[in-house]
Structures are given as C-alpha cells and as structure tokens.
Image 1 (spheres, rainbow, N blue to C red):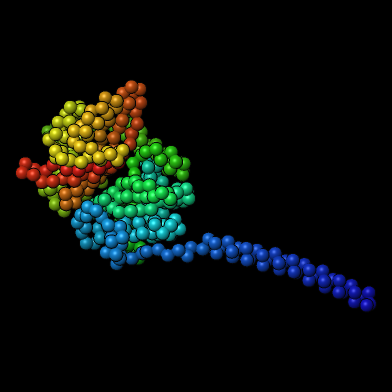
Image 2: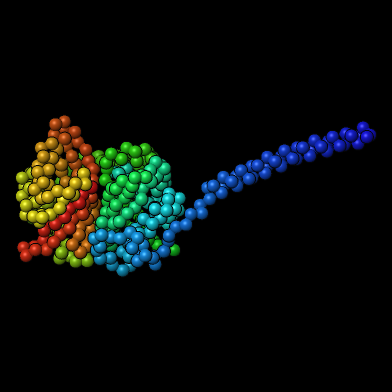
Length: 365
C-alpha cells in the first residue's frame, strides 16, 4: 500500500471512529432520555365527567345522604366523588386530576398548614410514598351553595387501618371547559401532623399563617346587646339555606351552645341537658362514642385543665336535618397559662320533637 493511500485510510478510520463514538454517545443520550421520558410519561387514566355521578356514588356511598340541588351543587357532588376515584388510582392519577380540579391560585389547608397547590402536591407525594391511603365511604356530604363539608373513611397502609377525615371546600364555576374548581379547602384541623405539613410551606405561606394565628390569639369576642348572637359569633363565609325556618332554629341552638360554653362549664352542661337527646351519641376527637352523661363528665374534666374560648365560624352549612360547622377557638392551659389557637369541624344531626329540635348525634374532629 502506498504511503499516501495508507495515510488517507488511517485518517478515514480515525474519522469513522470519532463519528462512531459521537453517534454512540448521541444514541445513548437519546435513548437514555427517551427511556427516562417513558418512565415519567403521564399515561395514567383518570375519570373526568359530570355524567357518572350515579355510577361513582355506588362505589363511594354516602351513609347519611342529604339533598343536593341541581346546577353547581350537583357539579360539586360529582367533583368530590371523582376526586375519590382518582385518588384511589394512585398519586400520578390524583396529580393529573389536580390540573382540572384546582387552579394555580388554589389554596389547601392540610392539618392546619396553609399550602399552595404545588406545595400540597409535593406533600401528598411524600405522604403517599410512605404509606398507601385509600378513600372509603362518606359518612356525610353536605353541599350548600358553593361550599361542601365532607366526613369520610380512610384506610392506611398494608393493614388498611381505618380512620376518618373531615374537610370543608369552597368551589367556583369558572364557566370554561374545566368548569367547577376548588378555590380553597381545609383538610382536617391542626393536629400532630401539622409540623410534617408545615415543612412544605414557603416563606409567604408561613407569614400568612403566622398572621392568622396572631389574629386568633388577640381576637376579642364582640360585646352585643340583646339576644341576637349572630353578631357575637359571626360566620366568615355565610351560606344561603334551602329551608330558612329549620336552618335558623338549628343556628339558634348552635349559637346558644357557644354562648353557654364561653360563660362557664355549668352553663354549658345545662345547655347539653336541654339540647341533646337523652339517647344522643357524641363522638369526640378521640373517635370514642359517648353517651350524653359521659360527654358531660368529659367536658367537666377538660374545663378543669383548659380554658377554651369558641371565637367565630368559618362556616355553618345546613341541609335537611344535618349541620356542619367549621369554627375557630383559643385554648389556655390553666397550669402554665400557655396559649394556642386552632380550628374544629363538627357534624350535628338534629331531630324534631314536640318542643322543638334536639341534637341526637355529634361528630367532631
């Protein structure tokens, strides 16, 4: 082989080698990216229809059903049922559904921690990687205008340990192809999960929440003249009720309960005597069902240890014989004078008697 020919061949081989290496790297990079993209591909199927309410309510039945009006309320009912179905399909399905159910401006308060949509999704990603959580039946689904209050079963972990959750959610019909979406929600009052959820907060959310807590710590219950307690214990998000006569009767009982509680424990125990049915079932934050007498003893013992002031309501939702309450309180530990604030959610079942209405069941978180 001539030197010149050998030189050309060597150059060609070197060039081919460089091209081969580049091609190999390129193909590896492309296929590597493709593989990564395939792994992250959002190909999960979700439910998204307003026409499958009857089908979904068989899967997630409401144990204590109440009236749901046509229009926005029916849409909200469907959104809640659809949310349960998509949650049970796994995190990817729930996150994909979140682009429909929420807006970028939506806020969700989880165990008392105020979270943006992105922060909420991040917290749920971590939560669901630690343990499987499945949604079960609804105990209640009260929908009143643009607000919903739900009380439902969950099952956690491989053992499917049972639990219950209460939530309040405000919706809005945005009038576009996405329709009814969440504006703000409260997923369970503050409890021992608060610090875990607060980890996901940004500086702005922490600041807003700190301002809200300071407001509650310094909140002064208004003084009012006369017997009208609606100004003394205002409702932040008032609702329009289907049956105002019944709703006003329930509200009078609820407001008087707040008033007597804040006066003194003896006043409250007398109020319980007069307004709870003798066979009433009262389920507290510890998920223990108590009789009326057992509940009174529990409250009397609690009053000796803590001073709790009931301040005002976020919501009072009423439909048929049920009322759902979301309210704020301030607690002072008597031994240390340590103060804290929080919120409670409660469902009350009323029954009509010859003398008026009485409470026959109470569930609180």
